[in-house]
Length: 111
Image 1 (cartoon, rainbow, N blue to C red):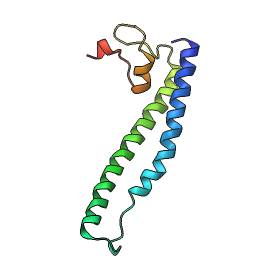
Image 2: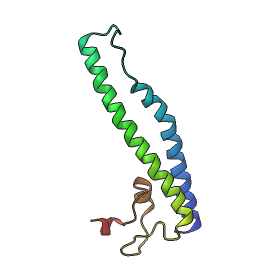
Image 3: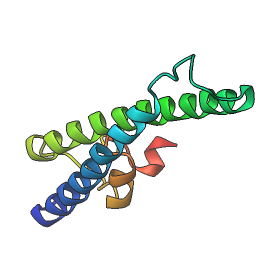
Image 4: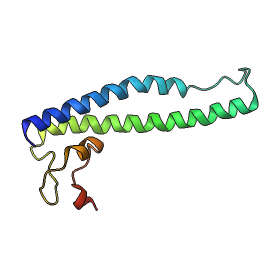
């Protein structure tokens, strides 16, 4: 991976990190417990519980993605083989690296 590709990857990863960091507080707010004395109907309370569970899963996924992107940003500067498949030594396409920053295999070798 040449310097330009590394810079392109870093810019895209940083942009995604910014988006995730902006989204996390909103999801954390949705995950707050609903007060039992809140005047909600039974169905509305059930809807809120389901929505809360969905928000918790999204929050968990975003936090995991944030960790993967952070590690990839560290690796892009420190690992001279970043962006190359560990099996066949071919370059991993940028789209795959952006979709899965933790990947160390090209599509063919991953199959």
